[in-house]
Every structure is written in structure tokens, then in C-alpha cells.
Amino acid sequence: MVNRKALQENSMDEHGKGVNPAIADETKFKYERILTGDRPTGPLHLGHYTGSLRNRIRLQDKYETFILIADIQALTTNFEHPEMLRENIFLAALDYLSSGIDPKLSTIIVQSMVPEIAELTAFFSMLISINPLRHNPTIKTEAKERGYKELTYGFLGYPVSQAADIAIFKADLVPVGIDQLPHVELARKIIRKFNELYCGKLIEPFALIDKFPRLVGLDGGLKMSKSYGNSINLSDSEGVVKGKIRTALTDKNRIHPTDKGNPYICTIFKYHTAFSSETLIKETEANCKNGKIGCVQCKDNVFGSIKNILEPMYEKRAYYSNNKDEVWDVLYEGTKKARLIAEQTINEAKKSMRIIYGD
Ligand code: TRP
Image (tube, rainbow, N blue to C red; front, top):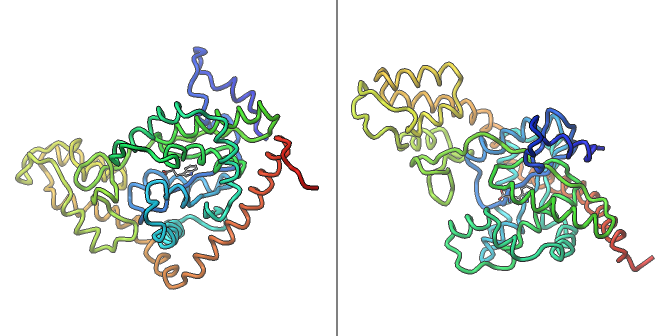
């Protein structure tokens, strides 16, 4: 088991200043179980790949990995269309499996099939007041982006349910993008309060922050997102990817291939940084600055790098698309295995609250 006290003490830097105690330090401490997840709202794209999938594929060799397809959380923004969930859950699983998530190493779970999460969410909801939820920066940004004037109880409270996602599976490490850090901090706060109040033994998790900068959209927009229509999906065919890359925004001031360019404002150069080899990145940087490569050629080069990543996925995707039952079996098996832990946790939690009434 992790020595939490040592961890707390060692989360100081050499000046004795606190680094964020919610952030994990993999170099110093041994963690055991990962829980991470996605809302199944549509096909995954290259932004998901650089932002989380790539990291999960690396981490699954090192930690016991649980990946939650958070369909109830998806309802917080899509409650009008629950009928879409089935297909989206399947597509998320297909994206995972084809991109290299190995069901022997990673347990994939469907959230709504683990009702103990909802039960723990109810207990947790007593331990947090409304204000910190209203001031949660991620909730605020998301509400603004979506143009919500009023927040539903479910949307405002999804971080509480996310705390239950983490606690129910006894995870100690949560690899997420920086936008999810407030949720991990909240989870820690709730769990600590639960443990203090009820002498509970829930595990306080740590966030493992993925430092890769967010992938920009084809339009150069701040982020690649399905809803902005600026994404390259993992399921896009080679031809589609090539066509999309052709439309990507480059340095507008470069008219002729011999014009000196500014790679740092170019979408394609950002993609090089994410997907190309060191040598190609360096070459591209110099050639663009010196007007030695045209944008068309440069786009072809980045297409090559992206193709290298997507190509191995196509074969697995074709296999699983023709064997849909196998995908569902992975989900049923994963959920079944994870549910055993969830049942154990909810029993322990109720016991510590002294609310087990039967015999
Ligand atoms: N909120 C996460 C997202 O929007 C998805 C998620 C649900 C999650 N439950 C989780 C992430 C638990 C980490 C841990 O992507």
C-alpha cells in the first residue's frame, strides 16, 4: 500500500513550498491502480490520442488500469438523447481497442452498469456544499462554452459523481488533462471528509497530469473538438485524413513556397511536433523559416507521420467492426470484474457509516 503520510510530506519542493498535493509524483512513489475515463459523446480524434490515449497505452503496462466509459456523465450534457449512448459506448470501446488499449491489461467499464457508483454519489453529495461546485473552474468554463444559463443539478454535481467513480474502484492514480485537476482535488476533499467523519478507508487519489499541450483543431482553433468540426478522427480513412490536412490553416502570410514562414503560428507545424520524428520536426522548422519547403509538401509530410500512427489501428478496427460481439464481451467482462470491487467498496463504506441493516 502507498504510504500516504510520506507522500504528503514529500510533496514539498526543496524550499519547503508546497507543490500541489493533488499531483502525483511517479518518480518518487509507487501507485497501483489507475482510473480514467471518457464521456461517450462521439468518435475519438487525434486530440484524444495525444491528450490521453497515448498516455494510457504507456501506463497500462505499468499499472492496473481501469477505463470508465462514463455514460451517465455524458447524460449531463446529452440528457435529451439517451438513445445515442449505446452506439457511442460501442464506438468508444472500438476506438480504445483499435488504438492499442489491451483488454488483458486494461479493464474497460460501462458506468451505468455499476449502480454502486450512483449509490456512493448519493453519500458523497452530502459532504460538499453547492458553492465550491458553482465556482469549480472547469464547470464554469464548460457551462460558458455550452452557453448554459441555468445548470441542472446533474451537471453541477457531476464532479461529485466523478469522485465516486474514482473511490468506488479504489484507484490511487487518475491520469487526466489539466482541466480535470479541480475534479481530482474535489474528489480528495470529499474522500478525506468521508474518512474523517466515518472512520472510512477510502483511498485519496492523485492526479497524473498529461503535459502534452492540447492539440489544436484543423482551423487553428484552440482545441480539436468534434463539436467544432475541426477534428481528425481515429476512424477517418487515409483519404479523409489527407483531405482534412489539406484544409488545415498554415501561416497566412506565406503565399509562395519560397516565402519565409513562421512555423510557430502554423497548425501543421504543431501537428509535426505531436506526430513527427525529431529529425523531421527540426528539418521542417528550419525549412519553413528559410522558405525552403512549400506548405503542400509540408502537409504531405505530416500526413505521412499521422498515417504511421493510424495505419496499425485500421487493421484492428476492421477486425473488431466485424466482430462486434467481441467488443461487447470486453465491456461486459470488464464491467463484471470491476463491479466486484465496487460491491466491496460500497459495503465497506456503508459499514463505516453504520448503515448496514440486514444480517
Ligand atoms: N470528466 C471526464 C471527461 O470529461 C470523464 C470522466 C468521468 C473521468 N469519470 C472520470 C475522468 C473519472 C477521470 C476519472 O473527460
